[in-house]
Length: 121
Image 1 (cartoon, rainbow, N blue to C red):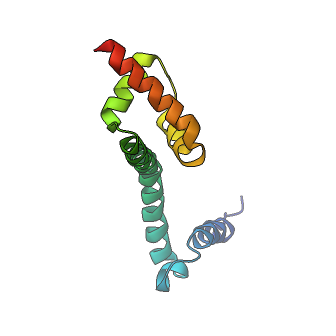
Image 2 (image 1 turned 45 degrees about the vertical axis):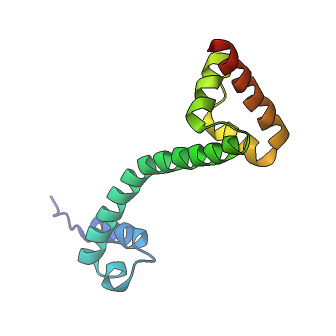
């Protein structure tokens, strides 16, 4: 039985790692040892930041909504409470887009929330 030489598979693995390291700075882009460590770490960052991105965007939508409803005489927490009491189930992403692109429609939703707050207590 002929012996198996592993040059082809090693070269393929190295090539894959170095392609993933394109754009990195210094030896991290062209030395296999440094590139492997850098690519492994970058994958960890990518995994973590896919989850962080969701938090960051939600925080952005909340800040936009807070600014928009304060112009109309409410706070964010009272607005969300009013929406819940009015039975409006529009998520924060859509609400923030409405506040930016269609202020008159957003104002109507805020008025709904205000009236629900007034009738509830």
